[in-house]
Length: 113
Image (cartoon, rainbow, N blue to C red; front, side, top):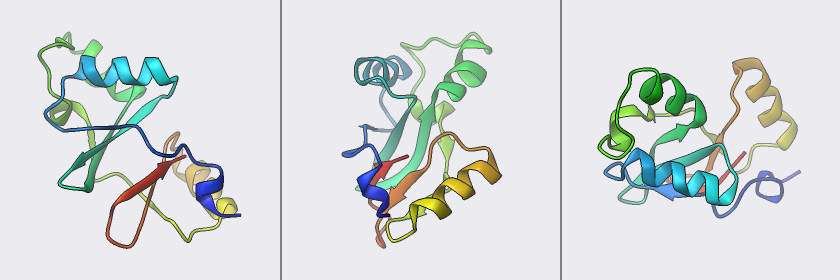
């Protein structure tokens, strides 16, 4: 099965310079647990609920003043768009990932599992 048939697309995207609050507001409005962080058309990270919990709230950082780039997961594992869904789910299970960006051959994010 094609990954894009089951992925969130288009993916929710923020920039590294956006505030954590902006990212969280987008996540809550759409009802997702992660956003892709994109710069110059390339995926540079993801920001997840776990990042919020362990890197912002736990450390008493301001969600209004902290930039996503300071607390995001950099260089996240990615699934190539041609990967089979069963392989992607097995990969996520083995690595204990809750979110997996789907990218094309140029590194552009197409969706998020």
